[in-house]
Length: 598
Image (tube, rainbow, N blue to C red; front, side, top):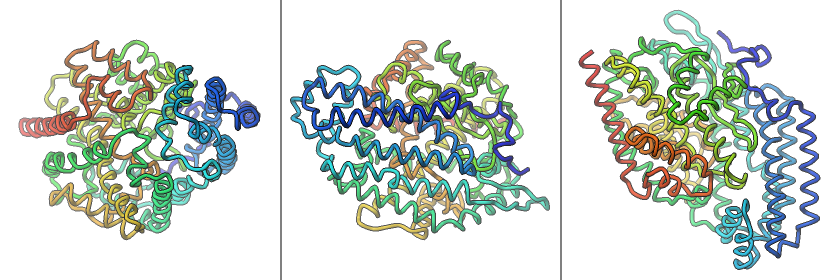
């Protein structure tokens, strides 16, 4: 069945952007406010940021400007994300992006002038500040890496252009790629990006699953050169910026804003690649045995241990699962979940031109907006619980903190989302003692939560690290190089237990995270923290829950190590990651045992 056009999707399956602005005219009224506020700030503060009082007054206005930019940009960008075929929304979003670049350029003097001031003056401003404290602390931290004011102004004016590789990637993927139908078992099946990633990858019928993967790979391969060119432009830009800002390496530049060291970054990739691989190879062998496969291929890795037992779940039925599963987080959290369903925070629809995967956007001062494509699978329940984890996190920190203090490090940001997946699984385990049910829940944890974050995204991160090594040494990448790097990365992890074909090598083309710096590895980092904090909750109960809620409210007032410490997890050592890997191995061993006795 072909995907519907956006205009044909039932309204109840879509999110309601009117909670940001009831009408487009209201958005444009805020655009006018943005222009006036920006002009006022230039006239009032440029050349005058020389007293603690003036500095804080300027930053007070900057917070309001950031708030207006957040609302207007989300309103426009979210409309594009659900329908890349809608040219009106695309043009409107482009206009706002240009305005944002102009404003950023005009106001670039703020950071430049603050950086030029003596540290003693900034410390006085910090002492006098309330909501601006951490912004000023970050200015002090950034001093060695800011450029001449005119250079900063020019770079800010070019910000829309600097984001072009990501836009080109999305247009090629979501607007230009038209997938032909494929044939399996003598029958024709429709194909699309979301149809493949949300449906056929999990298909229990081997011929349908493998033929879908082959057809999908043939189509995306047609775009490998333009996609590689966009990606190479992205990484070359990042390398140039790191050099301009006097970082020793592009890695140091990209990790700077995450507030973590290269040691933590490399540890995550190296230990998982070495220590988790043997467990996951056992899991692959188990899947091959259960399904009677002639061989294990990359296309087979997401099939369920017990597909006949995997229940179909409607959107309405998912509410009970999620409310009960996350009830341990408190009545206020459950109320947020109920509101999300009732007030249409979630875009469940499957339609042509819609972004793939899932995400949660949380504009400051408004509710969250969650995008996914509902396929009536239990995997969708876990995905929604995951995105509601982001919603709950930013509902808490947006309410408790200044807008300046909600820019949570990506190293930590996936912890609240993956925590929700774990809480859901632990709830399910308590509801039914039946061995087959237990095996199904454990396999959901391994094949959804841990596979997605500790394998899929970790392999992307390992591949990405090799790309940046080439770029750091002055080289560039093309489709041939990228295919080779991805294939070698997958082969190193899976060994001889999984056949890695040339089609599998094209997996690098499917991930938008590569246009967001060093993001892919943070899924496993966040899940490591979540696993350890969840084990505390299972053992200690309410005190651990209370600590976790303090973490959610802290926003970016603490760095990742500080946030983890508040949750009772010490990420400065290997112990949490090694324990989490052992935990995954224990689950796989139990799944093997339960398979033997069933």
